[in-house]
Length: 509
Image (cartoon, rainbow, N blue to C red; front, side, top):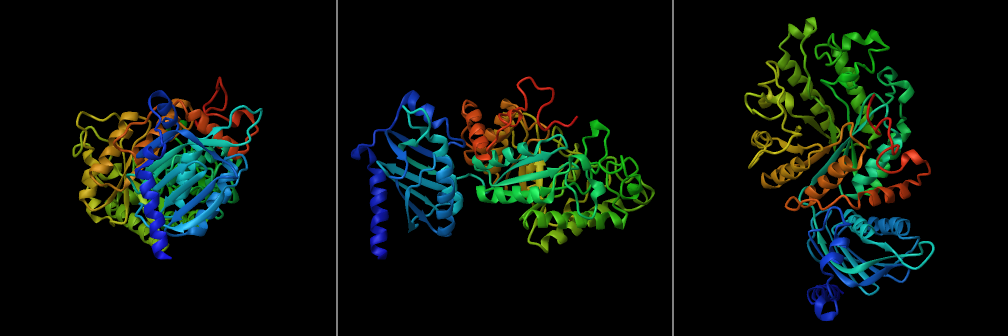
């Protein structure tokens, strides 16, 4: 039996290598470009032919999987009918004989046969996403009856293990926009999404730490976490445990808690921007919040604790008279240990750990209290180095390399600067950093911004050596996501709430 399986695998490889001799006529020129530009991120190797494969009940689909075959079958049974007009192929499974990296996949399609190979169900799901982006509705009918794709040979694998995107949930953000972002990130084969709550999560023990009229629910968040899991993307919670303690943009002058509940003043520095680290009640409150979100997010492998732009700090009487650097170190060690008990690693922004004198031209906000603490921090911390500008000539992103030299896993965090996204992704690969976490902040709307953050980011995470193509197909992909969500309201479709907007989706006012 083993000999037979090996023979079948060798035969498949032979057919792949000799495709042109067997009538596989590759597409060239404009037609090839039109089809290839639909796929985001662009596969490492993709050859498409003139002949087509119909994605219907007559398709013989073979899944070659190393582990979790049941999950791979379930992925096909779930998403093939959903994405391809209710059609159900004839599916069989084989044990994978070749080596494929995690999340990578191979597709070979001829006639009405298709072979998808992957290490596990995540790779199979990524292959289905590629097929959906390539697929066209069968022509000549009033309504869709089936889809087809070209005959193909595709071999694809990500350049990075950690491929993340950071999304903020503001009071003004419609829940549908959060779901849309999760689905879009998964569609573009990100495998992590950091979800930061800006005063919208109703903590069970502390309802005062939420805008009650804009609160989501625990059930709604758990539903999104489960949705992400089904689509191949893991959701990571974020709350800020140092700066940004108002959980509101500083330009708004708002404070989620203190605007209505001044009785909680002792938990914050007098101006409200930073948590009071000298008050033991602060640690208790934040610890309970972290543990609750760990439960809601189904014991995530990471937890983002923020810690950026924490100035001014050490301003209350107890903090300013303490050894504040040691307070901060102890604060971070506590949460690292708390999360480690749950096999979870903290992620934190980098800027309070380095000075502008050390790294001129880079984001660096360390003050006299925090500038010398890096060597005292646990190495389990994942440092998220956010640099939002354009790269300089021959840019090396030296701060990211510095943190790695100090023994930390480092995630590059660009924003909506295309050149910056591509340049940082190249540094991640060249310096063998941990991965990328593209940030979105209050810009979760608009074609050009969404394209840069979602499409260019994904392209760079999978193809650091290859620029993103065009945004021609981004709206089509958003529309497909809308079908999955079964949207029926005008302001929930597309990339803006309204064509002539009074406010952009996700912007806090």
